[in-house]
Structures are given as C-alpha cells and as structure tokens.
Length: 152
Length: 132
Image (cartoon, rainbow over all chains, first blue to last red; front, side):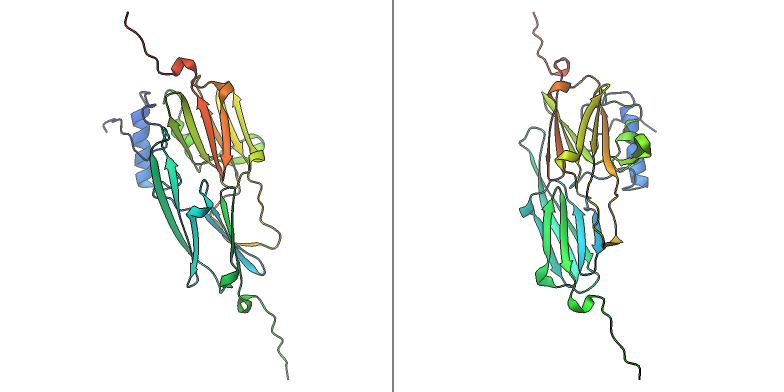
C-alpha cells in the first residue's frame, strides 16, 4: 500500500495543519474504515451532504411528539410539512468559511410517517437550543377509548 | 496534525464515539469543525439541546476540555416510540500543544452550536522575516 497524503475535502481535520509523518497513513485508515463501514466510525458533520438530522418520536395520551436535533439553524430556514400521514422536515443552512466570506448552503430533507391520524390544524412546533420540538395532537378517533359493551 | 496532536487522533476525535469520564459516566464526542485563520482557530461544536449554563470549557495541562450537558428529560407520561439520539452528555478534548493563547479564548453558544475562538499564540502566527 502506498502512503499518500490525501486531503479529503469532507474530513473534519484542518487542511494544511497535517504534517506528522503518520498523517497520510491515518487518513488512509480512516478512509478505508469509512468505506468498509459507512457512517460507523465517523459521524458526518452536520449539513455535509449525507446529513440526516436525528429524530426521536414519543407519544403521550393526547399527542405525538417529535424532537429533531438541528443545531445552528435559523427558525425561518426550517420547514415542517404534513401530508398524507407523513411529516416532512426540510431546511437550509448557510455556513461561512474561515475567512468569513465564503458561503455554503446545505440542505436536508427527512420524511417520517406519523403513526396515526392527527388534528392537522393544531400542530405546534418550537425551535429552541438547536432542537425542533413538534407536537401533533392525536385525532379524536385515534385516542384510546373505552367502549362499553352490553352483554345481554 | 502538529497543533492538535494526540497519540491516535482519529480514535479520540471521531464524533459519536463514547468515552468514559470520571465516575464511569459515558460521554459522546460531538460533531465538530475546526477552521484556521491567520490569527486564530475557529472551533464549531454541534451540541443540540444544550443551554449556556450547561457548558463547561476548561483548559487543563494544555488540553481543552469542553463538557456540555443536556438537561431535557421526557416528561411523565411520554412513551418512546422511536429513538435515534442518545441521552449521553457531550465531551470534546483537544490538545492545544502551546499553539493557542489560552487567556484569550472566547466562546458563544447559539441554537445548539458552540463557537469557540482560539487565538493563536504569538509563536505560531505567520511572520514576515526581512532579509537583511
């Protein structure tokens, strides 16, 4: 195997700061492991193209709650849509280069099915501390109900 | 990496890996980005769900340690249907290697992104040398 200094533009390591004799070798190993087990050893940096925000889904008696990890976004750049029982999150993030001049826009989209019917006009979403919390009130017929059965 | 140099850098800096802290608490290494300008380094650490009071930045023996704790807990009555996040807190360690002027480190936290400015120590700033 040849040891080559290869600068992966997506890597988290600063270009040009690399200069130990092991640098090229470590990079080779990183990339070989990444190719063999994609997404296992390294988490893609947010909005680097492969990014899918992490989602948690909870339910309580009356609502479904989605919590999505979306650090560093502006409220107006996040879009939440519900259609056909599928919740779609999308957004754009503008990043600045180290000199403050270069702008990179990255986008993400993620769709998740909602388990049951919800009251579409009462959905509420809040974005705080980098976490988007969406509360979807369950539709009346989806709430657990006791049905009294008369036995004759 | 000469400046941020550890014995096996990719194992400790890889985000998502868990390392044990004191008291056997497991920490998650957060995703982070490091950029360099001529007079400072800029470190962006992605820590969603963390408020300003829950972040600790310490420099100890030339190593920068950032610990960020998430305080949110699911309220009573909530059932988990699907989880992709971990409940662990974040910890990032970076070896500064005398490259940074420790007294002038500044940080700000906005919407789950911690931006740390690490001004370079005079010894490593680019310098013009005149030929006499």
